[in-house]
Image (cartoon, rainbow, N blue to C red):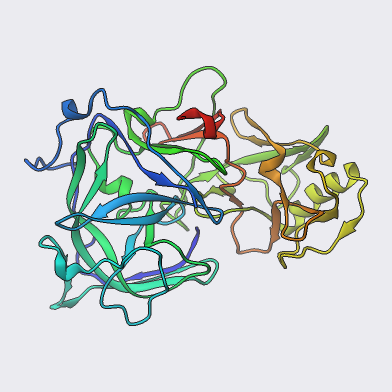
Length: 392
């Protein structure tokens, strides 16, 4: 989920690091380094089974991790569009209702509040949909379960302890930022294989998120594209979208204000739908409308998507995303068309937005691709995969 505003009042930011294992997997729920005797050696995790159970939850993806000593399990949304790890904490002055108990730092022997000029370090993070979290920064032990059965322990990890948070349809404990930012989970892991991450999202069944060498996506059918860093919004994973094919109709970004050479769209696991700037979005809509003979109708969700009266998804054309470097992603119709709560209505899962809002490649479009991030080679790789069946 893209961050609109992040304010952190602190005198020394995010210096904690942790050694990394050879490669490991942590639980998802679908809705460099200093040595330490408490951390696992790489050899302890070699041979670990590279998968974990996942579930889908309200168009977002959650992962299990533990904070504190003794470990307290939380379920947090995985978000490549932000960098702060935060969870709701007691005492809560204004917290949303979550399914699981709220973390109480007074029960943890390793919780340590960060200090700024003798006072608490405060953070405030506001996301693009106006949801937010406000609280204090702390260092805490974060524990991730590998499939070997042995935990991967990250002592003195910077987290946000949320005391005032607001969310739409909340079920989860908080957020795990996975961007390139200094306070993200993947950055604070550090180690021998920093910046390696992969996930495989599905609307049902199981999925996983990997870090380290187990996260490398390679082999037959894999396509890769360059990711870019921008000074305006550092830490986000920008890709370069060259064109979109709607059936046999090729809609180029060249000649439009959307065209770029060094990144024009953010790949974001925390945003559900895909967003294009309105001028280019209208060209894609026109191409879809040319193919579809069903009667158009207003979007019942209120998002102004292109919608039709139909009881079948089969009437829609196949959409292909053409990223730079020849990374052509042929998307399943599920990726690009949504049946709304109004039965008999399907909509194109692309929303038109206006500058300065970002273009976003959302998690629904990423379904059934094994998606790998490698910050050392500056590549994002995609492998078409039946994510529901991959780990059954």
